[in-house]
Image (cartoon, rainbow, N blue to C red; front, top):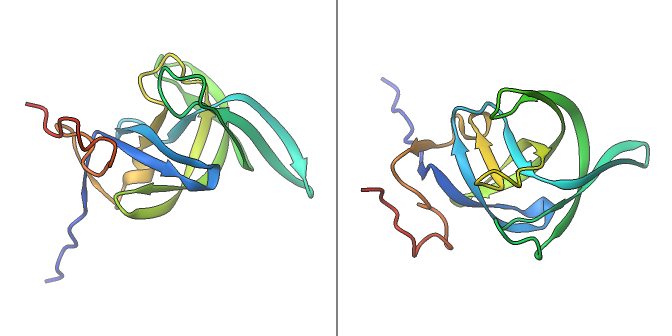
Length: 155
């Protein structure tokens, strides 16, 4: 019988990095109920560079802190209709970028949307975590240096 590989366990929220976008850390909600991943982005504009569709946007990586701003650019891979948390369909730009979590770096697709009123600047959906991690819904910041001083177990 084949030995089953043990997947690393992550909490329902973790600090992740998006190095391709110049974002060293952002608090992400690990949301297995969401198919796709989403990043808070404002002032989103599409443009062309060398015949390729690109997108430029601003990110405030820290909740309730509009002063720290990262201006990022990425190749635009699609526009997709995504159902938001209120149940409404919204057409969003989609990019592919690298996410770093728990010592792993892997490519994910991210939709860009304004998440100002949401509790997290980023959602990591099930497409991103599938076959990579197991999610412990009762724990947080298991692999986050900035979360290490916070309570890791919800009791």
